[in-house]
Length: 245
Image 1 (cartoon, one colour):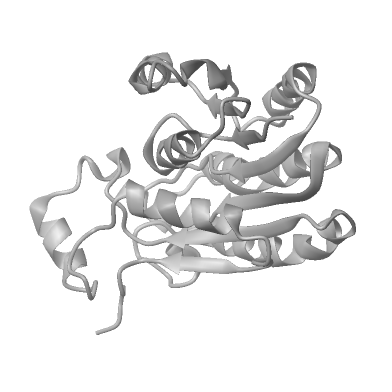
Image 2: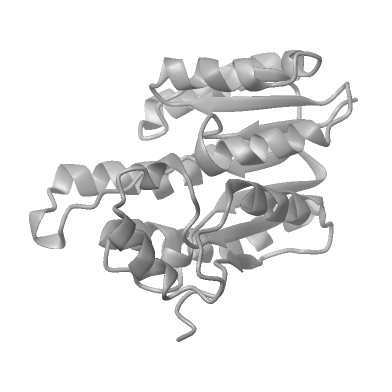
């Protein structure tokens, strides 16, 4: 029986890096289910970039993870295609650079739903499919540990994800399933594509390594956490030494 991995938001950025890392380390019988939200072009690009001999191991499923209803459709589709899950990676997330005084309730709710509420219920729905000794991994953020000025709502949701990670340990204890999170700092992803050089320089001055991290570095960390059978209830920072000055 091959290992089954589920990754939400896995066709770009950190999610894509994690999917590629798991695929690279996979056996032929392993399968990876990857969700994407709206960008068909990006999803196709991801699929076409995979090694041809491993492409059949990856199944893409379109699901808007800001919507409880679409998440439930995704869960039902997953149940049709597999009878178990070994690794569950909750990675889908969104943010806004709007100022706090400009927030609308609708935008706040959309971000909270995507980053926190829908993942809570997705994990609840998939818990029965998780195998004994399996692993759940959340993509948190160092913004949930250290307040950033750029997005209040994002930091609040990620802080909640970190607390959720620790809280779910007891819920998954009967089957020996581990629950952990990674908390990346500033990582070079398409999210930062519009950032100016001045902005990069200003942030890099606050990082002990004076650079943004790479997706590959975060993916390596995620894989190490998923593979570690004794790590449980941990939130693992990976930020290059941010704000140590």
